[in-house]
Length: 245
Image (cartoon, rainbow, N blue to C red; front, top):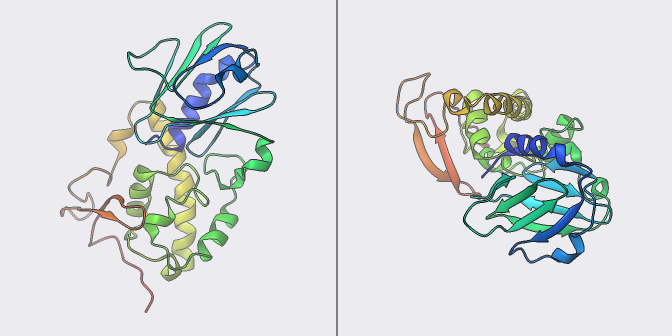
């Protein structure tokens, strides 16, 4: 599943088409394609893992889910979920969720929760975390109401970086550790973005999809953990498990 930094890159790749008019819309998404024809693209925005194509009277929301992809000015052999033919060029999205949103995006979204946004509010993130004391750290980092854009890679890397076991509960984390969790969720996301742009992201993984802990040189544990049931890679020696006494 593409994480927030990858969606920022997608938004940047789409930006040159701002102001273009949609001449034709087609695909197998269950939306009113005819409604899109003739509309001008006002802006491309993103929120967490969502790509937003803002039109004068609606917004196309695209979520690439687990295996979604896109092509700009080219097509895949498979049928697109959404294909937009523009004045010059075309945008094609595959294996994704496509919806039409009504209303002002600033009312629909709380940009303070997006770890990649200029409006990101770490104090709000800490407040929301404190309201979920029984939540596991591995689940909290994937909560899009708290950390919009954080995915499984960032989750594993952040927990390893701050030496925290994924089965720690949020309420048991010391204040210092909670602050580190919030700070690193954003910091690592921007490092992810820089590495992704430079095509070196995988070279910087220390925990995700790894077998040996680079600190202790012992085998990482691999398990599907928490309510989210996503893969976790963690070291039982250097990642402390914080639990309520």
